[in-house]
Image (cartoon, rainbow, N blue to C red; front, side):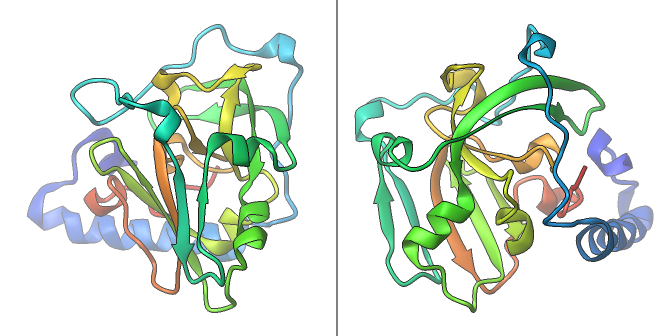
Length: 216
């Protein structure tokens, strides 16, 4: 995955790399992905002692007033929502211990707690015209776009906990997107909004040539 290593081949090679990336996205989304295939789960004894953290801001993103944070849910929905962490924690909880895969080649096992994105979609009344979901963060405008099938996968969650503790700032507090079926850069940290849309959103790395689908 040349583009993911920071080199896109220059003007001569870049169009070819983008074509290959689009083909990989199509194969991953239309042929290999299944909403019924679950990533394997692990015993908590297998959890890694350290999981590297990444953000694009010069310093770790931190909220000045964490109590004032709210998640905005909107777009193609019947009822836009403004949700606090307490609101999300009051919804049915999903917990799993899974392997995290980074585009740089490493992996690590961790436990995540949160609410299924599909439950949030049901609560806001997602409209049938929605085909994609955009995720925005307060990490210098970082964003991602997902296809609807991946977003509604039963293991796609809005995570507020990690390894049986509240989600730390180093991994996206107060809320991050998580799914063991995607590479790490697709899991937007420091979430502020979820938007259901009919148009395919771009993304911070995807707009620089990284694969859009990025399935594992």
